[in-house]
Image (cartoon, rainbow, N blue to C red; front, side, top):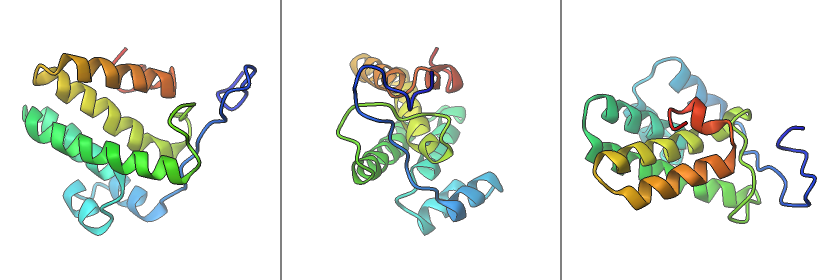
Length: 139
């Protein structure tokens, strides 16, 4: 069974549209700050900035970057038909920016002692795709 097969009649999986240019820029090693300057709605760029800030032990900046990527991703999910719940599969490449931003938000929240936010984001990530927490270090 895949996430797209819902035997309980719940919402179908949401698949964000492909973003070839910013995805190629990130995958090619372009500075994430340059990526979000050119494509400010690209969640994966914000997620990359948050992840970098976390590796630099700057959880406050990571929190801000991750929250931006998270909200940009929520906007895109809603435009793609998401109604506030249902699968957002990690296996669909364009969804990964939102999921990475959500995981980075959880990590940053934990680092600044925001326990409720950490738990909420961790649960949201697992609810979006049970594979995602292990992929993103929250298993």
